[in-house]
Image (cartoon, rainbow, N blue to C red; front, side, top):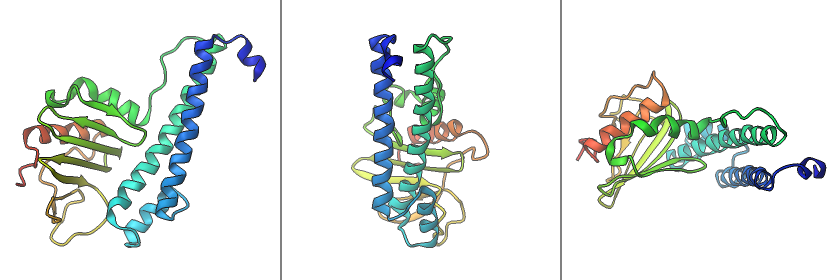
Length: 215
């Protein structure tokens, strides 16, 4: 390894070291998350939510977070390989993007104006700050597996696809209202499309009505 770094530009060596450290931090974060749920791996969390041995929330969010952390670690591994290739004189290709980074990149040009300047990428989520004060946290794994949490006027809302049955709710996606009640998803989402389209449709609906018309 010392011989490898001898001919590497100091800035490139620092970048490689930073990516390695971030990968380690992600693994440790995921270990802590799994420890908090008492599960040995991510999909055990989802099974526990289905069985009712873990509460729907934060159980479903923990499963999404664990899966997204794993995706992020693999994305960083690809980035590490890319940086090492460039540092070793390889062809200068664009950096790889996957997971939440790819999702954020795909959505950025099409964000509703109210959210256009307030997107931030986290290891296990994407947050959005709206001009009206609305705060949104998105965990999206696939077009069918996601949780959208937002705070508006001091109240917390959530729209998600957790595999939990609620009385009177016949849709997979459902809304947790601030008063604790759960109702069917009131907006149209392209669940058979691509993940960016689902998130953008939700943000557009939220920009139109911070309560999705349920107040």
